[in-house]
Image (cartoon, rainbow, N blue to C red):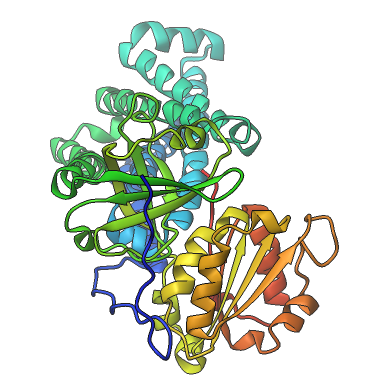
Length: 466
């Protein structure tokens, strides 16, 4: 079975997408402010319950209490960031939330370790005994401490496997499976807090703290479990076709009912769970490679691992569970930006398979007639995915397209220096710039764009790391 993706109707000024709906958005500054206020309030729990601190043992123990409270709060923040809340995903952006989540995870592990060491040391000083003896006493006397030790071990395991050196050697599916142990660790840590936490003796505080954890748990269940299942029932997503695009690249076309109600935009992504024996256990993120067409969605994938290899064996009719849409990598930046509104000029830069969301934006992003430029970097001509579609869109929209071929080590191909960017786009500073591709290269390009005079607020990019 094959499917032909229909191009949207062209107008003399290009492709005119429907105006986006008004949505509740949480901006990065708003999110950080809420996190900061919550952190201060949590420290207030220690302050209101502490009349005085006496001696070295007291100072160490109270430092342990503070780091324990902070670790418990950090768990709430880290889980909230990955709850797939639409207002956060669209307002802050999925890649930024992932970076915050990773940093918060490191803080959580560090605070949990500091809490453990400080409490043991403080108790040992107060009891006039050594640290090893005190550790044995705590582990053998208090059952909840043993649970906390297991939780700490799980957090350390998750932290180690999330380090860049380890993560790059792991399959996404393995990494995701290890991360599921987070929920067991959180449950054990929560029990420990209520069993022996000196700051949780007041019933009102217990109810408040339990309410916070319940609220975050509800967000996780609602947006990560119930919403995808509801979408499966409401939209009955199924694979329509698997379309090869040459060596190592394919598209999966998914159809369903009432897909406009998903409110997906070009540049966004879903986490796709294809319900086959091989693929049902993993929900992998893939961007839309074309603007949604009625009741069709399309992703384009580079075959690189076991999951993407299995996609080539999908059969039409396979049911699909999709979480999303996610991400803030949309035309909203060009609509809201002062530069974008004033000049109507947009520069899109796609590197490798990062062209997929860029191609979707190229089709629909608001811009002045002839105000769009696309830079597409690939190793060789055969790696230029969706080239025919790109050239068709360029012809209709009057856009400029530059293909940049060659290895990253070859001068002028992999690394676009400021002078090269200005040569290709002389009025570069008048553009909103969208980047998508491997993290390391996109980081280089963002720095070079800044050196070429592009404002930080005019540079938007999407990360492909997990």
